[in-house]
Length: 349
Image 1 (tube, rainbow, N blue to C red):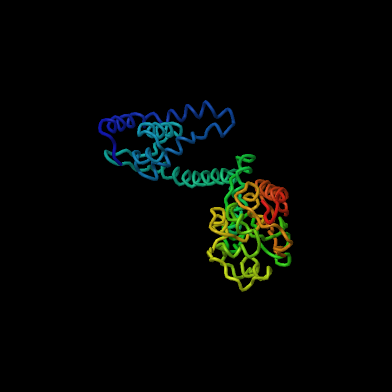
Image 2 (image 1 turned 90 degrees about the vertical axis):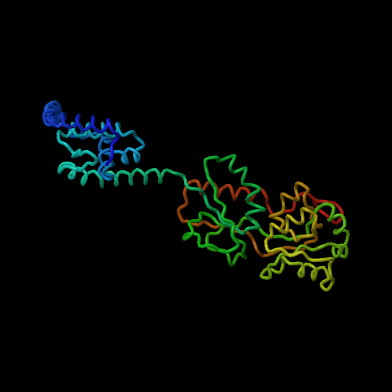
């Protein structure tokens, strides 16, 4: 261990003088406190123990002081205080190094693992009381178009609850991934046991106001616009081929197709006037309400036997998960399944 010049020499001289008095000091303190019959009063101060263990681990007061964010003199005083309390030297001071005495070795063997256990316990208690974020997973389109626009209201009402949104089109193992809630798109027969239905699915063509004014005049007018297509072959009701077949123009060719692999991208393209999209009404409802999109008048088509289901990741959710789950259900009830506000003519806004 290295000391700083004159300070180190003064420290060594002071220690030589104090060694002679350590036993007497300890005897006096023992006499003063033994009659109280309380062994807790005989324990050395925790700060002094911590300082000693730091020094013994590093065999350096300089490095121990850095570890504890203290000055060297402060650590030195802790060691002196501990030696006075015990009435025995714990360190052998040499010119440029230190070593543990037999008493120091015994104290280190006892105190070091004890402090490790104490630190581990303190961290575990803090971790238990620390509120973990509520994690919800959903498909990218649902997360972007339904959860995110509403999430601000939850944060305003519950600023102390953190939320983690895990957007993923793959089905994740909720327990293995530590996920609290999931929203799944499935038929009733495919929904897991205990899943709660949020709302159903309905699909109608949607477009920006300017595009809708042209495209929704009649079925043939739709072909004069670019059709925004989702590359989702597993769900044909979300593709234009099914819709055009249902309207009797299956073999007709539109102006163009624009293909997307993410549904939220497709909808944002529709908002920007790039063409006509098949709008999943529960997801685009806010855009219909504020006029960013206009929907084709509802003629009874576009219903699906698929729905959106809320799934619990754990059988015993934390309190903050219960709060977020209740909020999701309330938002679904507020949204409902119906299209907002009846429009006129061939379009509905």
